[in-house]
Image (tube, rainbow, N blue to C red; front, side):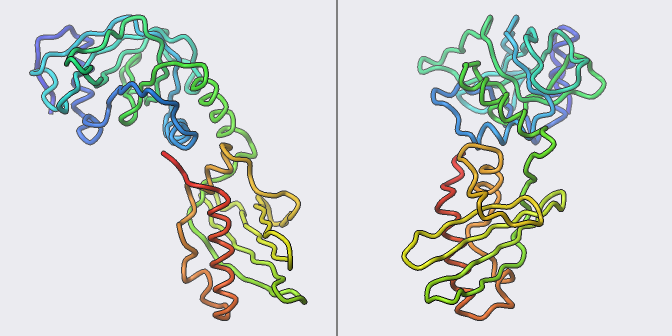
Length: 279
């Protein structure tokens, strides 16, 4: 439903577009976090956003309650015009200025923040048919610019578009465990299914008297020397945030119970080594 209010034409059009996405409107907040976002949180936004923009707010017009009836308590909606400083990712024809709507939290005194001249990072999508208008993605589509966040966004963006970027994990496929010639020796291999059907597998080696070792392979060839991924990389994110919390029963259905139990232990070991996907 389009909210009819007494606004200038560009602002009225922006409100109309915002109202056309009711499932997103309650989420399109420009909350100002006080802590550095985790790698997984930033990766979520970078991967989801067709537009990544480094911008500086030129104008911020506060909407009246009647113009933004769905704003949650403690927030206020602004119509923002921002100057594009750099297009980190997106079509090259993006305008030098962009406009959008954002919900921002009131401070402890119930006052709206001053947004003019603030440098921000925008995670957004273009509005079809409306040049220069964008829609923020999710509750944190506008973030205050910091050198740390800027570097992380650019780094993840480069990883995502690289030719050898690791694919998204869709599910765990078959697993098997082969015992070695010595007691306590063996190898578990776990095959993963991916969004683009590229092969990804995990291998876990057990040797008597040694710490278990594991590696991830991004090809048909399992390279045990490859080792685990470094933390806070796209491959780490794909695994830590994409793997289920337990090895599915169907993955070990063809195995003997003892081998299946070892495979489950080895899978849990991999998850523990990866650490939590903190968002």
